[in-house]
Length: 336
Ligand SMILES: Cc1cc2nc3c(=O)[nH]c(=O)nc-3n(C[C@H](O)[C@H](O)[C@H](O)COP(=O)(O)O)c2cc1C
Image: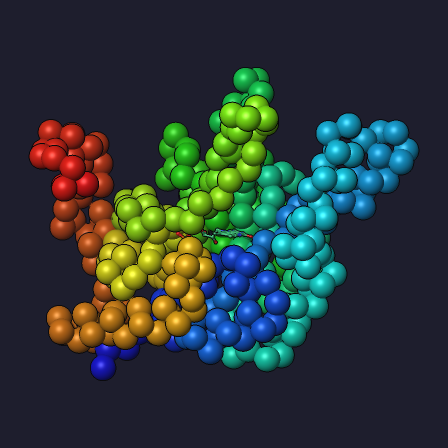
């Protein structure tokens, strides 16, 4: 039987199948269910920068300093956020309970866009007993005066501040849309990231044609989306000095195996577990082991990175050439 064990951020994992942040780990029961179902580590739903700084924002509102938008946000969005992830205090309590009950690593997720006092919270996540921190960095720059370099510098500053605040390993979850992702990845590693989680899935708003209001919308992922992390994990493996995790469209054993082959140390699943239940983890694990046994792979470590861009098997497939080939070879919808 193949050895499925791997490591993520220096943490030993029984298998590469990690449960990514989602409402499935909203409370201790959910966390326990995921562990029993075979999750090798559990990333908790994110705690948002806005929640941590909420008290300050509300105080600013009282003192008349807060922008109207902040006051509106505080009134309109924050209660929903607390319902989603319990709010800052109970979040730390959940980490402590999960630490006491779970054998697998429990990873706290902090979701943020800019530097602030909230980064001190990383220390409290550590004190509560988390095994690592996943920093979900997501900003939406709408001001034409803000340049890509400014945003990227701000991201590196956040990583540096969290690195200083905690001794825990830190993974950074990124959006896919950067002009030169390898340079940003290298800068984040330089600032202290031990791993990159590729990618954050962005939920675009929709427009309601009746009310003409812009409405938030979350659609679970489709398997085809796994090709995006596949490409970028494949490009970054061996080029940046950190672990890589793939997330987005990993719904089954084939997509998990592909992510490992191009260089991921583990995969993080959310949509498929929400849709089909945590029991999917065991099925996926069994199927991965069978595939590896049939091909004589003794361990996951033999797989990791063996088909990355650096491995040299098919480097052009990761670059522009792949785009040209895909377009010119299109032979009908059944090919998609
Ligand atoms: C309902 C829902 C809630 C999510 N909440 C979070 C979150 O709190 N923090 C985070 O970093 N990602 C969150 N995600 C994103 C997932 O962790 C994952 O990165 C993304 O959905 C792509 O993986 P998937 O294709 O397996 O769903 C959420 C996804 C879903 C569907």
